[in-house]
Length: 425
Image 1: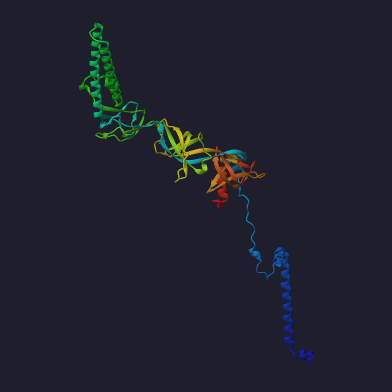
Image 2 (image 1 turned 30 degrees about the vertical axis):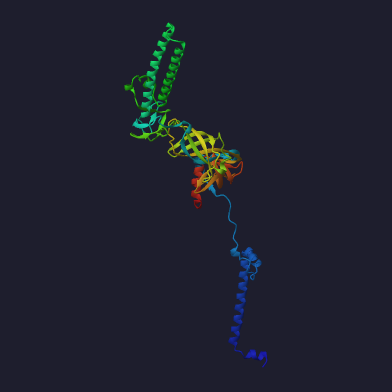
């Protein structure tokens, strides 16, 4: 049977059904093709990008994996005309200037060792009186203690004995001289008596000096005429005007001439000993100015100068002690008190920005730059700064000379920046 006969053998309804399926399929293909053309016309870039990436290349990222670079522009702050007027914005130019840096080191207050005296007794004995206590202000010559001294009593007894012998020799010399004038005594006898008189005078002078060395005063010696007037009490006087900062003398204490009883210090000038690290040796020299501050006196500043730097380095701390002489007329700086010592160091000329232009948000620092030709708009730029000195920060990163920054009103811009860009907090 040929094809024609076979086709005629198929029922009519079945032939109509096949024609309908073919027509519907063709229409669906045309519709899909039309949608593809329409999508291509609306997304030409995506079509080209997809066409350039072979589907068989596993090492090439898909279009979804390609990310745009992150934005690096400064956040922008916008103020309305009214807010701009209220802010009273003023600006200044960033410029090159010689900035200063401050070196801060710890220090401790010490008494001026040249005005500190350790008081020892000038005679052995027993302490009878101690009229002063720690912290007392004393004047030079004021009694600090009274000591009963057997040594002084012996010296006074010997002095009285020498005085009596001298008086007897003096009378003998006068008699001999009278006899010589009368011819009843020879010249040789007069010379012998004169020599003995001179020897007794020397003994008296030596005994007198010993009394003075043992602390006997002029009045005490002048009143010493008889044995009943012997006074065995030695007064220990204050050697200088100052403060009693140490006392070991107590009633009944047996003392000797090598024993410290008191320490008296003139605290109108004190030493501040500052610890310098090795890396700072080249920055601080004798004569360098120093500012001293203490936590006990907020806002108070003492000024001094380096008078001496220890040539030896402590092997344990690797520091050297710098001695700063500081006037202390009110004695507010106390011995062993901890203080901070600031040295001002000159730095090279560099970019500097006024302190008023800098605002901190967290641990970051920002300045605000007016946007040109856009009144009321400001760029909020993060900067990296060095230490502040004399009203300026040294700029390490973020600004260049002639940049215009906001000074007055920068705090208001900071508040607006945080409000408009909460992600900065």
